[in-house]
Length: 541
Image 1 (spheres, rainbow, N blue to C red):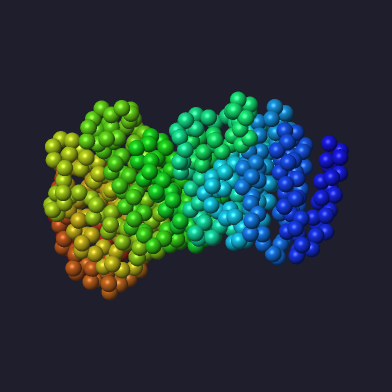
Image 2 (image 1 turned 90 degrees about the vertical axis):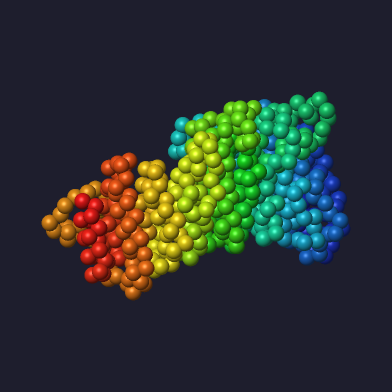
């Protein structure tokens, strides 16, 4: 052992002394020695070999090698990242060495176009899951630790911290065309489903001993880390992974991650509701981090995917089967889990919309409203009792999504915020028999009209002799708003009046109507509007 250390020290010094022009003549022999050390069963020799490789990786070469291959090092370092050595300290050292080795491979190859492309799936499918494994493993250990204050100086450099730093560095170097290959191993699996059951790395030792496989990692550790280890539920680790991804990649590439997640959601359309909900929650977190407007060129496709998943979930809950054509499917579908998923989709719809500029947000609202099935506007409706239930649930979920998108929407021009094609559909839903749907429509109208944040001051019906105590924020009615009221006021008043007459109204409906009338008088009122509102209120009474 001592002689090996002396020999490697000599090789290291020779390597450091080599001039850039002649280093290629020496490197092949050097890497063969490092490979021999990494193949050893002795942890000390593996660590020694890794340290030598890291020194080599930090050397900048002027003349590239056309034939040098790092495939063995990627596989071996990945295997070391999954060490299951009996001794905890030795296991930690081996894993740390594996992570450092992968970091060295990335640094050596990532910017050299003439080297083997480290971004190829065959490499990413090993590197990324190895880093995630150490993140996940140490996270579980930390959850059992008594207090972060008790962490010693020695423990501060943990495999989790090192792998997170390495992952951030890897993603930060990823160009536009490489993002997909770097993200894919995090979530999309291509291996057999048995791998999802093999979560303990002690199997590495068993397979190695039984079959003499040098790199069992390539056999049992599939590229899909979150899928095969059921880490979408609970979603804590998945959210952490994608926060690292979103903060590490270049901001202009954020929409690529969003598209990858959306595609993965579509690919898991028939997975358990808890899994789909986990993916959607991660989407929601990623949308908040993404820069404004970086959802990409296909904004409506994002919302189309979410709404499609919402409709599928409604079908699953009604039929009890993932094959919506028949009932009584082989998988048990829990209705409350589907409801949780639906709420997650609605929340995510709002998160996405909040990152968009005003003009795109308006388009999204028009798009959502166009999907609401309404009988009076030649929209295709499902027939029969089951069809009626499906129509009602679809209407409610889409209107809830629209309410999420409209919350906080600021638009100075009501003509553009509420165009006729949108307003006609919305007001027709205001007269439906279902009281819950009517309430959602009233709340949506309130969100549109309230542009100065006054609605919370009219949440309960009250009579005030001095309105100044409310400290309302009021601006003079603009010319565009005046034109809007001249065009649409009578239609709006008529629907308010007819809604007020519905016998199935509850207290919430009258409070919403009171709020809508008050906000209309503040936001959109000129002399003519005030007179009309007084007539409307008298007619209601």
